[in-house]
Image (cartoon, rainbow, N blue to C red; front, side):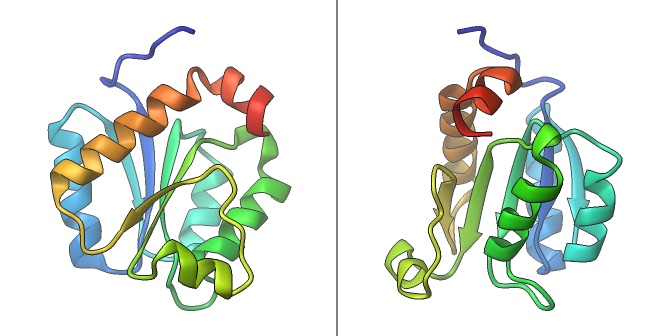
Length: 140
């Protein structure tokens, strides 16, 4: 499996909490990642039509459409550009399951989290995903 360098890895962050979005964006940029940040679902859908991120950090609880619904929509509409997804939420995995959702192979980060946890989860998702093409072959 070819390991990617984190410098230049493009991460799309989708979170309606602009304060947290800014903190995550700054941390990732300082860590050498290229970042695109969206504070709403509509902006995220637009940006997914323009970019091909290597990974997506996705908040679950958002207005208009929750992150799980957006994840399913991305799988349907943007399957060719689909990237590993790490979900972020104040809900725990059991609460998500009880809501009737299956997060599948997505990574998961329960809020509140510290930035070291964020870095660890991103690295784990990156390692388990391999290259973009390998990820598509397994999960796409």
